[in-house]
Length: 255
Image (cartoon, rainbow, N blue to C red):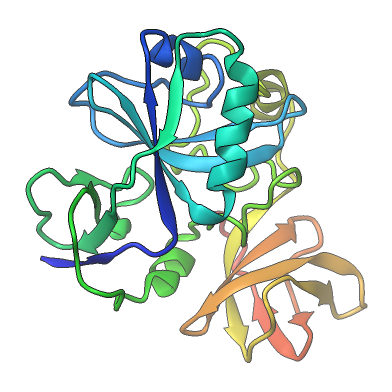
């Protein structure tokens, strides 16, 4: 087992008799049943744009939401706004988050986004971070909160939530469902996140241009000669640049 403490994560705890019904009507995945394991889900704006992504664990007597610490307070406030008079309590659990690769410890759950991301566990103390998660993310084109996933800007289908098991198109209504369903069934995505080769480096968020200087997209996380880029598919290909870094896309979308 190779495990470490996950940095900057907050675990919110939802209690109360209406917690499952409440959360099910808001987020992009079903809350599941006890024993189902981790679910990856998102909360969207009514216009279908990303607000927060998190791991959801139904423990039977409560629901845990494992979320990036930078957006945990905003997520809790948004949930409180929707709560109204529902019998739901929302608090920080104080549970530490561990993650790792290889044989998982007892009580750990597989990361639902991609097999290369290993496992996650709650209430388990682990070593200081040492795994190059950015290299793993880039190779599999896994977006990260606050980097590739930008509140009030990103669309989850362009960010790959279909292949990350982050959205269920068969569940009932949720906030932003109408826009997401229209993007899924009535249009072909013309933009999205892909993995590109990178010769050189550039700051996260650097605009990408083609050889004629036309805007092509944006470069984000980079590791080991690759990067995650948000591209306009019709303009991507050939010679592309992000500042002084030269980029190449093989035309394949992540699966």
